[in-house]
Amino acid sequence: RKEVEQDPGPFNVPEGATVAFNCTYSNSASQSFFWYRQDCRKEPKLLMSVYSSGNEDGRFTAQLNRASQYISLLIRDSKLSDSATYLCVVNMRYSSASKIIFGSGTRLSIRP
Amino acid sequence: GAVVSQHPSWVICKSGTSVKIECRSLDFQATTMFWYRQFPKQSLMLMATSNEGSKATYEQGVEKDKFLINHASLTLSTLTVTSAHPEDSSFYICSARDGGAVHETQYFGPGTRLLVL
Image (tube, rainbow over all chains, first blue to last red; front, side):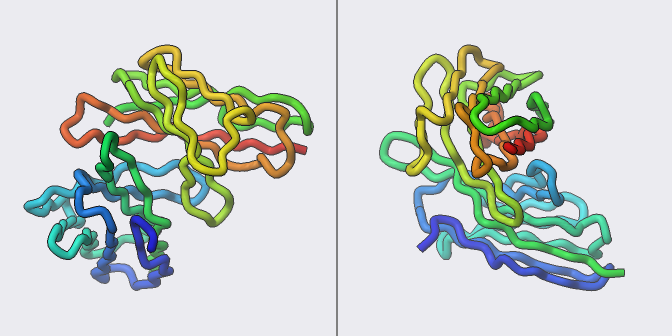
């Protein structure tokens, strides 16, 4: 089982739709969680950190469920510019160190 | 957000030459930097973790003698691809962890595209 798993997609939705992604992680001692977006042939850029209480940034809402070990990203009123690959990132704690693990990404395509 | 630069952004070289890529954190000190490689339509693959002043930690399957990493200061890490071959052609991305941030966010450089002929 992968340490961080994401549905690869692609998700193809019309502009204005609401879309949600989930990401599951295997290490219950994971400490911090992030969503990054990566545009084609570009580097990943931080979209938002994910806090235990859930957090919202404009049209984007991130939630963390520690009991079920998953995080989610909700995008409301999607725009064409939201088309990208969304990477789930987990900072996992092992015995003597922590390690950042990337999911393989979920591709999102917004159509006019 | 914090800024990480990478240089060069593009490299085209002949097989057998060595290529050096620099990664700099511009407005914060990064005790830890990471080097990733990404092949087309694939996910980021962590190659190694670079800690300032100590030897890098390489992921399984990554040859440390092939990919030399030096992290001599809190703002600079370098990756040298020695005797590059066509199969080393890839998108190399560094990231730096902002240890001063609450959640230790990673910030990525713009990447270096390496093409070995």
